[in-house]
Figure 1 (tube, one colour):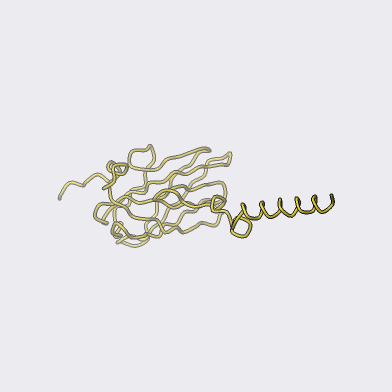
Figure 2 (cartoon, rainbow, N blue to C red):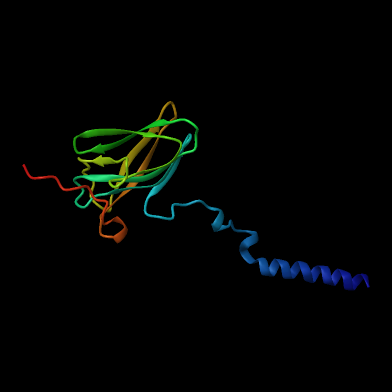
Length: 160
């Protein structure tokens, strides 16, 4: 009787180990955070920067497209800096608590008139607010070739 119980326990452990396979030894991919879309993300204090990307057709001027979630209870002034064809360029945007979409068709936008980064490249963009230490993200520069980005390029300027 004891042998039968011991054999059942050994068999149960063997089946459990056999069906678990490599999951006992390898990390689960579903627990690893990653950017599922084309943009990049980061957290800075109360601000969650999500899916940041730049849309530019020719790399001369672009527009930053990003969603920022202010998880705090106060308004923050976010400063965004990037290296342009005329030096370091910065813009500021007020972020009330909650979700704020930044883009050419949103209430808030950050145009990048002197971008100097071709589509397909990565442009360093620095995000910082208040006394929080900022973060520099390598933001992808994309064209409006995909349907979801077709309306996001900056408006053309009139020739002089």
